[in-house]
Every structure is written in C-alpha cells, then in structure tokens.
Length: 302
Image (tube, rainbow, N blue to C red; front, side, top):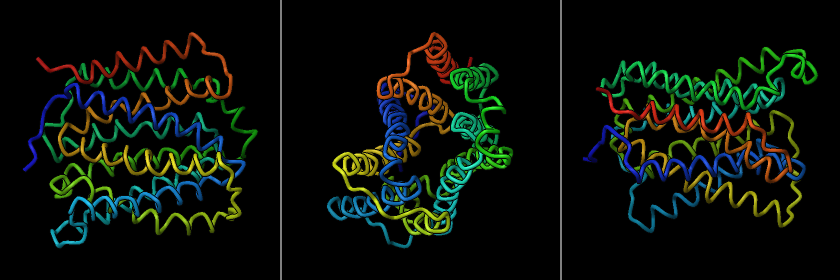
C-alpha cells in the first residue's frame, strides 16, 4: 500500500514545476506545428506513441497491465473522461479564442476542490486555501486579458458561446477525471496502468474524431515536425503524465491541481521567447500571483 502524504514535499513541488514548464512549452509547440500537422491528429499520434512506449516500459519493468484487479470499469470511465476533455478542447477552439478557452479549461482545480471532499474528507480545503486558488485563477485570467473580449471572439465565430461552453465542459471533465482517479480503486494501482487506461482509450477514439472533423492526414514530415511529435509523445504524453499519475497516488489531488495554474503562464513566457512577443509587467504580475496563490493553497491549516 502506497503511503499517502497530506502535504507536498520538495520532490513533489520540483516534479510539478517540471511538468507545468513542459506543458506550457507544449502548448506553444503544438501551435507552431499546426502548419504541418492538424491539432487532433497531433494529439492522436501523441497518444498512440505513448501507448506503445507505456506498453514497452511495462514489459521491461514487469508491470502487469492486463491482470484482473477490479479496476476496469473505473479505468474505462477515467479514460473516456480524459478523451472527452480533448474532444471538447479542439471542438471549442473552432468557436472561441484560445485565451477564453484556457480560462474556462483551468476551472478544473475548482471542480476537484468542490467535488473531491464529498468522497475523500482529507482533500477538503480551508478558507485561506480557497483564497489562494481564487488568486491563482484571477492571475491567469489577468495574464490572458487581451484575448478575453467578446469582440475578439466574434471575429472567429458567431457561435462563440458554444466554444465557451465546450471549454467549460473540458474543465469539468478534467476535474472529474481527477475525482474518479482519487476516489476509486484506481488510486491503488500502478501509475503505469492508470495512465494506460487513459492514453490507450484516447489513442483509439481521437483518430476517429480527427476524421470526423475533416482534418487532412497529409502530414509534412519535416525534421521540425518529427521532433515536435517526438517531444509531445515521449516527454508530454508518456513521461510527464506518468509522473502526474504517480503524484496523484501519493499526494492530495486538490493541492496538486492548484499547480496547473502555472501552465498557461509558462505558455505565455515560452510564447515571448519563441514568437518574440514582449514580456509585459502584467505577465510578470500574473506569474507572481499564481505563485502566491499556490503557496496559500499548500499552507498547512492551523
């Protein structure tokens, strides 16, 4: 039985920051790869590759993926929720701006904090921790303020409200995936099997979504495209998600989830480096706001 900890230690914080840094970079990487490979096809290839790597990793390390342990139904549910989140994200992007979608998507930690205590009492947050969560969310919204106006969205689609609704649904699905993992027997299985449920189901279903959306499967396999897909697969869908599953099995999900607020801020920072956009005082303030908010979330209750 894995020993669970009530507070995040240095190892957890370091791993979380490393994951958030890469996830922020990956957002920019996916965008930079769009001229050579459509988005849902990119994520499909990412999860197909991750499924193979995870199977190979388990074969080498002797981790059993297909033994009967009573987790199939919960694993199937987690996998479907995980896959549905990505479907909502990419459908939503057709009708709303990336900034607005990001705001609604990153309501996920709130859904975890609201719902999980009904199943796991130790995940309940105190008032000061809720204030920290709210501060981090406001900081992210402040960083993305330029893309939040309805005028900017109207230029994309007359059905911007549908895009916003799909983005909110993606945030709910992300939160529900975490709740299912933390509140069922899935929390007791290996991180490898837990991740396998999610990437394998996504690898099967997302290519169908790509075809349904009419995406072209003619990929320009340049060195950049190969490198991008490889990074998204090996580091993104395999290594970083495996670390996240390991963390969920050992630390409070509500406190882990608060760290994801760093991801969109890191994405903006990578955007300034890659795309030459200026680092504004607002972006620096947002980064500090997220940091203070996370400190409050992880503050030990009196």
